[in-house]
Image 1: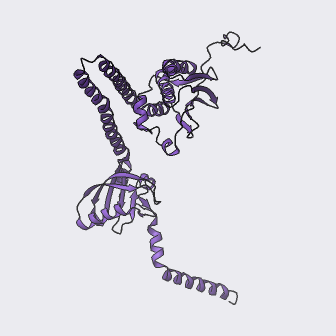
Image 2 (image 1 turned 180 degrees about the vertical axis):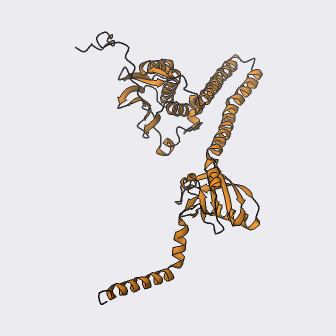
Image 3 (image 1 turned 135 degrees about the vertical axis):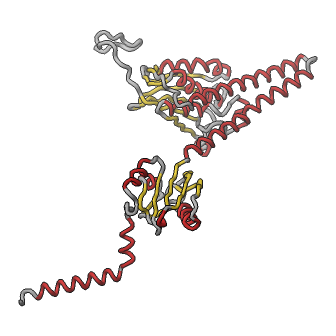
Length: 393
């Protein structure tokens, strides 16, 4: 019997400690039991039905604890620690619980607990169920709202940009009619009308190009594109403009590189970079375009010796209709769409557009594209050598 007493004492002490712990932490123990969402109070059929929904779904009990939640509820940050994490959603739930009527609401919700984390637009429907439970069904409308805003901005910008040359043409035509007997004035106003009509034509064409790039099937017919041909064609299109501005145009770099995509779109992108470089270069300056391979990428860089771009403007330079110097853009015929088209062409080809610039030191715009090795259709012994490159022994 003496050997048993130590074990009895230990057992009694352990039981006493357990009672004290349960009495001291009753609230915490109950909270721990509901931190993890459970399926209690939700039938199996109901759970399967909720899982089949594409919407984000929450089922809350009478205390506001989560009984059932879609995985997206956690990824969106709607639920944390078994409770609704966003105050706006909690307020809507409590209003429905108090009034007993379903409510629909579109809410702007933070993407996370940190300040400045961005916002998302959610369409929520909150419905009261039996037993004090609440059903919350939500759909993320952020992308749709953003697309609507982009479209509205685009239409507004296009309308504003078209009004300028159209209004100028109308005013010039009226002035020309009044000065019909003055040959010198007629020639001057006619030249101005030609400039405005060219600007209007360029603006309409770039709007068409940008609209084409925003179509989901912009690159359905991708083909193997020779970068040498793209750069040569783009340089030929701006050579007359370069000569008229007395700017030297130089082309060089690594030959024989290819990408998959649309040759016309890529030519347009490079030409836009060259147009931009020529407009921001002084007479007797130099604009260079070079091609290089960088690992699994092709880099097409256009370098000018212009006035450069301030750091604050570099962040917005690829926005549609953005012009750092509107007065200079009017003088040079810029539409504010050229670099935006470059960005969209790069994105549609799986690449990106980069800019380096320093005020007073010029700018370098680079079109970065995934490289594509052309398929070999002949053996190494029968392949014709590249012009200017000797065959390897």
